[in-house]
Length: 229
Image 1 (cartoon, one colour):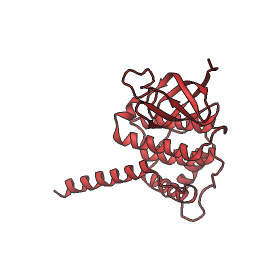
Image 2: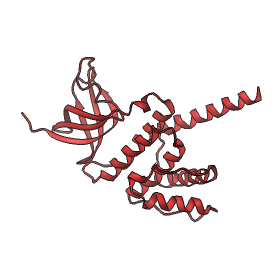
Image 3: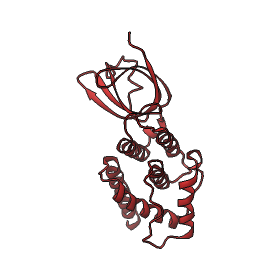
Image 4: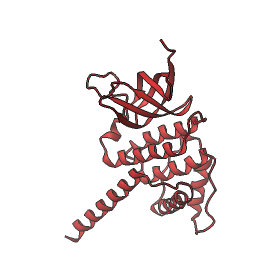
């Protein structure tokens, strides 16, 4: 029997393979982003069925195959159930997973990215925090962790409070990122700054972000219709 390796991480993506199997993309502390094959995980009686879903965080016991790892068992520490019960929260969470898939690489040092993802998913479950603020913080800190943060854009008249917030996000530990709120005006400027960053650094269309944008537009339209009536 092959030696088992224990990897701590979060499932980023799940793809069906054949009739009963799944292929997982996991962001791990030990080996960066890895691909793992879960045989029989789509069978209703499989002990791996709960562990092979997006957002799942835990320890995954695998062995090395020719082109990927093979998942044998998992010890799950957090399923992020609240995100699964909240459509908007799930969309934000899926967007965070997509961003991590875009940024991270196999066998890279990705501990900070994993920690950022975990804390950001936890923050999405807090009703006291505006989800758009969480998204802005996540996007800015992801650039910092990836070594691409360009600083505050020179173009634009940014409020002093916005500049302070940006500096706090850059310098703060990940554990202390989601401990503050901002005014609507500062949030609007953060959203504009992160829009500029996405255009510059993320040359990709994220499906979950498109769904989220359309959902927010529909909600805003519905509220407008109610007010008019």
